[in-house]
Amino acid sequence: MVLPEHLHCIIELPPDDADYATRWRLVKMEFSKALPRAERLSAVRIRRGERGIWQRRYWEHLIRDERDYLAHLDYVHINPVKHGLVECVADWPYSTFHHLVEKGIYPQNWAGGNEAEARCND
Image 1 (tube, rainbow, N blue to C red):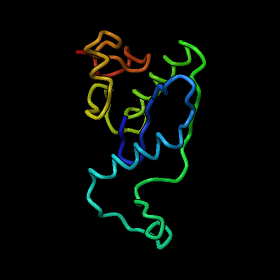
Image 2 (image 1 turned 180 degrees about the horizontal axis):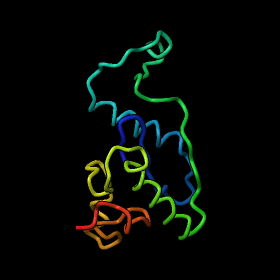
Image 3 (image 1 turned 135 degrees about the horizontal axis):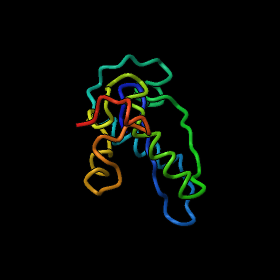
């Protein structure tokens, strides 16, 4: 899920692999290649060859079970609504939500449990 100022994702690493740092470095590197170099860079970032679009840290959470996985999946998909970017989850184009609707995992009008209140019911 890509938002204007941050992103969320759920990734599954191969068995016996917990190298989150390398994965994030690769994700940031590939994502950055697609963006124009318009951000302001500090001397430290220039010296390290870093882009100014990323914070140096990240938050990781090991999914404990199916319930935890589903809760995080919901959190990721409700984020554009939570941040006031759209009124309906389905209106955010940069989300795996659309793919999961096609697979039947979410209904098109899903609104994080607030479907009755949401203006997303067709």
